[in-house]
Image (cartoon, rainbow, N blue to C red; front, side, top):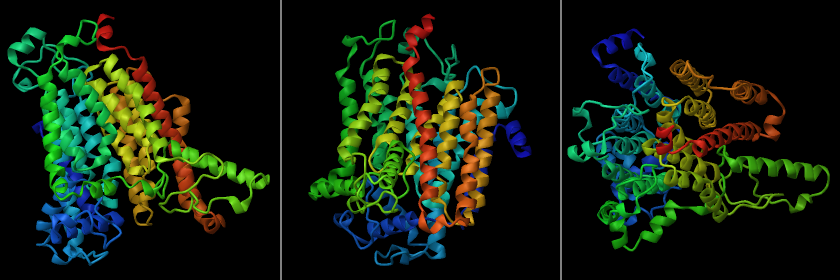
Length: 557
């Protein structure tokens, strides 16, 4: 706190927060790392030692290249730095190679590329401000948002312990979001009127005179680039597509907020399409020329992996699988089911494979796609027919991410971060959004605990999550202290239940005789319990989006 006070006096509090979390990341270098460490080492070797024509065919390791081409080129660039640390890590046949220099290089490469994430957070903070500004630095929305993003528990353990490169990817996404909020030329102008995000509102005539256009093209460009780094961001593409069409390609609205259909701009549609086309051509063009696009897409979308990951992501299908398991047990006890006819590929086997449900209908990739589309459609309709500006876009983006997480095929538990991080932006704006954020974040972060299953990391993950959760709840309660409580009794009871669940799974269960016979129970309990909380947060956010009036009606009221 003393350091923050000094930093506040000099105006460098953001730099102090960024430096502090960077030092923490350095302290986490010796910790456990998952198989993703070997995945990325193998990709370094593939892109460095093989021609581009073999990148998406190489299969010496089981960890084949399955990210889009921009990420492959990212690994290629990193490999030319890696060779100065340890040339042996770039040998395709050196499977599971992990020298001390390799460890240092890969850990520091994640820390260094997080610079983009830090910059993106700084840009997002420019979109926040306005009414709720406390006297103390720690009560300011910009400070709270900076901590929630820079010190995000989930991102810390996934990238800097488990090992991945999510930081700079989320940096691209947050930067694209920030550009959709910002206007060109805004920093040099006085703020006339502030909206709920602390942004300047100018009369239409002044906007035209000064050329204050939102930076839609930059946002679209950054998101197009992001899609070619990691295709999981397709989850939120509908929100981007509809928002850009609604707010950029149509240049004017009626006083009630509805579209002026005659304001449609073909030039803007063509310019957006050209951006997407050029980025896609740059990414996929070489593989199109090599006639390898089918092979690339088969790597990017491996539908043979099965409905769920080895550890069920806490979504609708976790609840569905658990119900199927309960019904099968009851069916066997009551002799309604024949043990010889039960499918051998069990959902609790810990294997990543296709399987058949025992009682409930088995789920196909097409069924998950249909469920996902149905789940995101209401948010898309609200974005179009009930415009709420960039804030409405952000809420739609989060609902698209959550809906895809809830109903998608082979969803990883780490994908919850795709909703948690942008939800941080909403949490400092309204008390209702802060409540959803806290439920989603606490539950979603706890669902990541099984990623770190080694004993030395147990106190680290518990301590870091406790610190982040306590700060999140206390800071947002302080920010909205003049409004109603952020949690009702049911929500409080549910969140407190995570404590006994952790004690049961980590300390009590290993001492029981069930450990050998039913080793999957801790993961099942964690997945199902967290699925209930995430489903509730998704539903609560959806209700608020559906009942909120559009901007035009809000102003009239």
